[in-house]
Amino acid sequence: MFAIINIAGKQFRVEEGDELKVPLLTSPEGETLKFDQVLLTNDGKKVAMGTPTIAGASVSATIIDHGRDRKIRIFKKKRRKGYRRNNGHRQGFSLIKIGAIASGKVKSTEKPVDEKASKEEG
Picture (cartoon, rainbow, N blue to C red):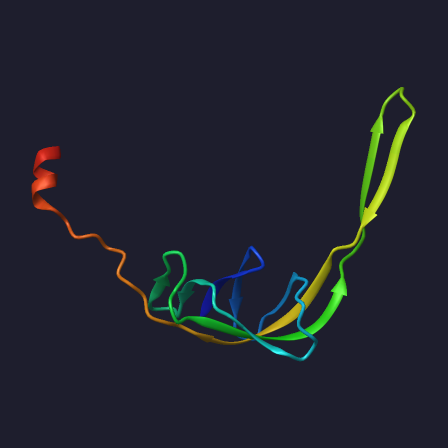
C-alpha cells in the first residue's frame, strides 16, 4: 500500500517503512507525527483520490534525525564589470520513518448525468 501526502507544501509518495528527507520539522527526534493531508491512497486493488484530501486518512511517522543537506554554491558574475559574488547555502531537513497508513472515507467524484443537458448539446 502506498500514499501520496503533503508535508510542508511538498508532495511525497510513501510506503510503510520508508525513510524520507523532508523540509525541517520543529518536533524533537523520536517524536511520532501524524500527517492528515493525504491526497491519494492505493492498496493494490482500490485507488482513493481526495478532493483535494481524503477525509479521515492519515499517515504516522517517527522523526529519526535532523540535519543539514550538502552545500549549494551560488556564484554571480557580470563580465567586464568586476562584479563577483560567491554565496553558499545548506538547507535543513528532517529524516522521518513512515509507520502506518490509515485510509479514510472517500466521497464519490462521479457527477450524475443530466439527460436533458446532454440532448441539448448533441
